[in-house]
Image (cartoon, rainbow, N blue to C red; front, side, top):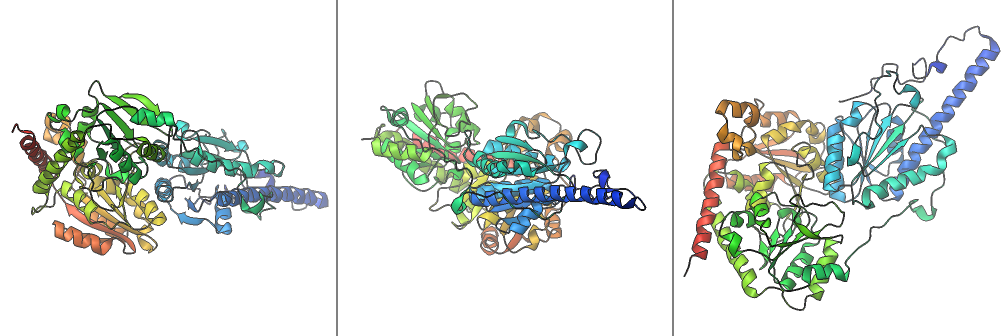
Length: 619
């Protein structure tokens, strides 16, 4: 447990280096000395009461703002806020020993609820352990209120234990940062404003949702009865309420539907309401290249799910060359799609409501700061007739049908349980009410490339802000706590990297979380990179393959998770049916081979290429 405060005399109110005025031998000092000590103790008690009232006020204001979840990593310096959260009782508390896991758990809760989650740590390196989750929340646009306890000013810069400079700890990753001095009653007029603004900045700031950082200094005594809270607004309203504007101006519609042209909608996570996306596509006569995270990968005449496989074919660059591309939501992982988008002479429109500038290739000629759902609905209502002729979308739908048939031939009905087939099966088999959390590296790519459209698909979430493998399990546990049954698709290294998040989680029946671990004994994505062919095998394995001796099933069982194994698609579907939605944490363990996985991908892409060649052959 990083940076945990020890109860070694440094945090008590008597005889400590933090409180030298509370120490000392006054025996025989006379009545005046005793009275002086009593006055000093009364002053300390008053100060502790102000701190407790401050913490209680923060909690009350967070509740008024509509927050419902808080994650606490236990420690001494954060006692006033931890006690206030526990004693108030209106926010659901999640206790995690590991601050890193606590941060990603809070991230998952915020993803599930759409509201900011409070996460609390003690001082020192405990606060630094939250940095990976804060970085992901920043780039993924996930609201969090990060509260790090700190030592008072007199203990800064003098070698006091568990003390470091925490001001601005998360740098530009925090939407808003406030270093709060030790609370004093004379300042209670700003307490409610501070709490309400932290929520407003996290959920409705000018750069969109993201993490905010409150660095809160507390002084001994850390345990005290709270004094009276400053009064709040009438009727339980928060001190500040900030609403985000919903944009959809006629100029925005004209940028999309201002003239005839062959266009495509490239949609990812955050693309808006899937129905609105498809309504706009129908009105425009354009296809929808639908990432599973968009929710728009549903059967329909506009849906293109096999864009990666189709656009690997060089002939697609000419046959499917667009004039306009409208980008809604986050980017796909597909390099084939990215290469196709970089063709010259294409006008790109980036819908970017939060000014995140998700355009690493710098293609966008027009950037619209507008709500994607409102824009799509306005386009659907405004477009009098399709901008492209019917042959444009027919060309896409024919390619999609040929590619999907080829994918089914290459992946379905075979004896082996390949990694693309696992991803394809999960998207197809999970119940609508479940959420699929997908790990980085190959799992998110396999899902994006190979999952076929389906009616009422499960929600799909992934940490694609920084795209790291860390925190996948903790994030999934947060989603499960905030939303309902979760299945997690991840590799063996991602599992081992975050296995500590299972500590305590498997002991509760309040969540349903099923880990689907694809175990290829190492880092499978590196087998697709130049390192695999250009380095000696032993060097590649040492630096990139990195097989681990730990058995993932044994590790999961040690944390109390139920473990089942699946060797074919039938066993996988049966295990999913049995485990997903059942209380607690379970694992479905699947073994694959890295070299064979590369061969499966190559074979599958060749099968699609042959199908497209036949489709496009001269008649």
